[in-house]
Image (cartoon, rainbow, N blue to C red; front, top):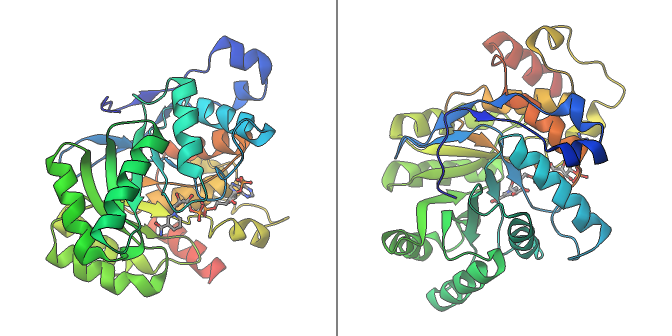
Length: 302
Ligand SMILES: NC(=O)c1ccc[n+]([C@@H]2O[C@H](COP(=O)([O-])OP(=O)(O)OC[C@H]3O[C@@H](n4cnc5c(N)ncnc54)[C@H](OP(=O)(O)O)[C@@H]3O)[C@@H](O)[C@H]2O)c1
């Protein structure tokens, strides 16, 4: 959980390669990293989310598939995984998978507090540690700003106790940006997590530059608009310039858009499919999009 690396090398095991031949072509060479401003710790730009995709029964076929997703993720240099006690048991599944795969040390675990009172938060936190099968996490976020005036001080208390290394706040709608910005201005924070995508680029107007100014790391959620963007590009060719940039899929392009903003530390797309996981990791290499390319995408998806 605490290992640092500037460049994370990829390398699938021979066993996995033999079982899943498509890994040969898909495994990335390296992931770019960005520094967390409050510590200088380098994190890979491609992370993972667990909402929906990790809400599966333990031991099911979907669970076994998630094991292959995480194997591809960690072997491809991924570290940051975001979850929440609110994701229908996804945090339990993540904890079990991390334990079975022996990945706890590699994983930067980001979870949340989503509670309405100090007593609820304390009980939820104890439960979170049990479900994630750990005694500490890397990032503890106040979920959708819920009861944040009470919960942020509690998260800071846990940071002081060494139970989390970083604290932050999250939102997932444009309507939450102003309040998130007010808190970024007024409160010391290590991270925020916010929505940012080709069809919802508003965060770039004020919030992301503010985070850069204030030295706050940024996780990006909903880079695929919760999967809806794929329906919009069905049967559509990538822009002509994508191939020259080493971008081979719409998923890679959507993720490249998110990380092309310099305030962004890590984008956390969700998937329950190993082939998609490998594809996503490929976005963590090569050049960033130019301003003109970003504007062309915003225009296309407006
Ligand atoms: N308030 C908050 O704190 C908040 C809110 C929203 C999200 N989040 C975090 O951010 C993470 C990401 O957000 P999100 O899960 O809402 O949305 P997202 O990453 O924009 O989209 C995820 C969806 O895209 C689908 N998908 C992925 N690759 C695909 C491909 N190549 N083709 C077609 N479909 C594809 C996935 O389905 P498959 O699994 O079938 O691939 C999944 O349903 C969440 O998991 C969560 O950890 C936090």
